[in-house]
Image (tube, rainbow, N blue to C red):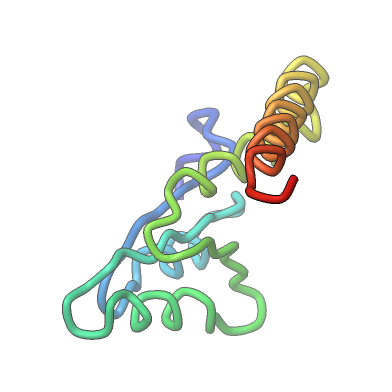
Length: 112
């Protein structure tokens, strides 16, 4: 509950099984929370995914793929970039780089 008073602006929480951590953080914090379901042996992480996605009204948790820590980090950067022009420029450049990589890989496909 004190994260926002310490300057934190986005919370990323990984959780497995019943995956209560992201929801608890979202219930008690005014900050955006990104939940990362962790792969488990029982249901390969689908239990975690469903637990994080199915939050009640008023307790939103942005959810990425099972094991999607990289996308969670990128989503956090995008949230922060909405109010930081320098960070936004870096995110635009990063995404342009991804597009260029994709086009290069596409050009390497047979029949191209």
